[in-house]
Image 1: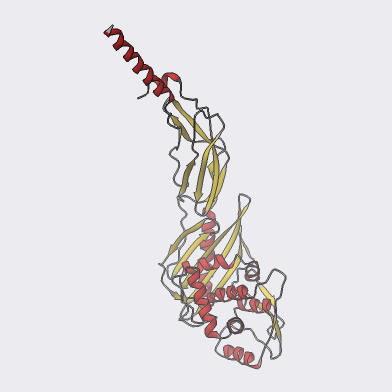
Image 2 (image 1 turned 45 degrees about the vertical axis):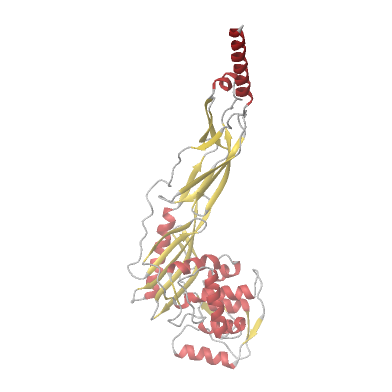
Length: 401
């Protein structure tokens, strides 16, 4: 009898343990990412950096390709007018086709341009009583780079030259241009300084304004002033150079600054217009502006030569696996394709955002999202189970520890 009682107790314990094993929760299936390619294949583009000054290059929508010569503040000449124009358009916005309000030129405006002409500055002639629209003043500022137009616009927007300079520096700070200090609206002052990297960043911001982008892409403009037809100091504007078109941005040249050139070039690559921005500051002493433009064009072409479509993911390709302790792992596939633009050596970043799963999991079910990034380009792709994950079988439930 004692034996039977012991046996009964043992059987009861076994039954209880079996019930506990069956009813206690099973671990959830987990999704993990397989090792992926970390960089775009191929060699990093070799760029023809200038031998003096500073330079920087970036591709719109992707990011910085490289820089040369450090990031120290240096005089930038008339490149300062990019900020002047940006502030004018922020205070008095225009849409394409609009002229904006008119300003009447005074005798003081005439004297200013005459003084600038006498000291061999860049200027646009005006006549007392002449009316010029905001759009025309911006054309005169950005195309023939009229220093007098910078002063007229600064006075109009800021109420004084000093107040406008304060606005310029406040905007530079807001944009994170940490190597930039403005002392005047035209850039004639050698105390107006910045770096190639800062002005590259500013140019990409300014070019998002359609009116700014339209004006800086004009090779010449006809102004209703004594000056008449005026030409862009950016002599390559509108020219097709091989596969590329120069669409901006601004030149500058003073004794202190040397040759300065902030540029934008575009090329159709794989059916998409790709825009490269660049900046060359402190170009040589002989024909400094021509040198800066030549060096900039060389940098832009080399940068565009390095950009190509990058197939990051193909739809249906394996990107990971689902693991469950009661069966072999099941593959996880990309739910769509991802194609970016990039260049050799550029980092590819991936991050898996898995869903909380509970068995069973049917084949084809979305089990998470894969975030893919190259430079500033990002995409989110659903990932799907390539096969089914079953519910834990009774044998596994009973025998697990």
